[in-house]
Length: 482
Picture 1 (tube, rainbow, N blue to C red):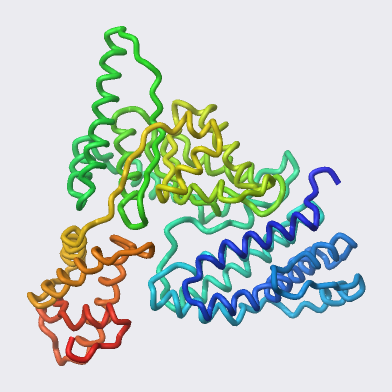
Picture 2 (spheres, one colour):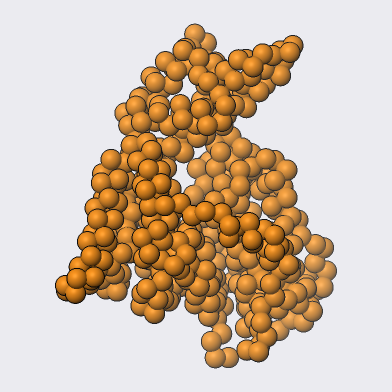
């Protein structure tokens, strides 16, 4: 069939997706277990999707099923009648055993691996669903129910919420041209809420610049933003005087390590562009590769196009954008996303600004991967790592905003610890994220301590001690003599 994805392409997409996810798993035991068990879990997901779609099996289903394996694991060789029996006898969705350990790792590290796995599961189910070139309502519903089951486990364990929107299976339902996509009632704001939102005063340029100045560190970034604002102001004055104004691209590249404030600055810039009249709305839409790329033919263009539509009038912020060009495979769907993105930038010059962000080296490779990217992104903002003093200031700010205080001993311990953390940093250094994780764990340790007190005072409810911080840093195990 025209546009059909072959079994070989299914295998390649599946293996590349799992390999990319596996590289994000820091725990060696979990990584080995995931490698061993993931194929079995995802083949079961394929059975569930096909049963939900009516249970009719074709030779193409057999080819797809036998393509679901990763390097080093057994290659399936199921026969037609065996697959028919397996589909009809599918017992229902069960979370994989390794998902429990994954959540436990997230609880300890404060990471979001489990919620990323939910996106991987949804995308693979949609990949399997496309065996007949159609993603049906029933198949999307199955993917959604699987995602809900896994999400409920994450919520039950108190894992932190994701920073970007999850993959929505119903966005991939194959519809007839005249059939509009259903819009959930929950997504439609009540009239009162909409009016309240509209009546909320928008921040002025001065207020937004003050917010930028209040951010810890980022001296060079603040200077770059102010220069950009001045450039826009002067350009407008020249236009008013009938003077020539050379072409100017407002699309930006943010270079730096995680936790250096890139998303925060992008959100402020969206507001600044709006306050200056450059953008009509000024909203920020944040995505990464999973928010633009689908796992099968034809759907990446739709998914990327929808992200562009949501961002019209504001800023589309693409985190870890280098992942869109991270594969040497000429058929990688990330390249398709880049082409759709570039077309969207060309078609919506006056109401769309795109900011791409990521590590310096990979981002330079990404920008050189397509001439259109190099020509549209010529302004670079460099986000330096926070030093020890800046990390301490961030911790103090978190305490102040949330009604906590550091005892003198805790403040001294934090100063030494964060200075050491900065000076001994490696590729896993998380900047402000490390501080936030330390703060959140310290709160949990303090709660355990204060809950054992009889009628604790206001000061005791607020105080974080050096012991709270040490326990938070050591995963709950204090060190003798510390």
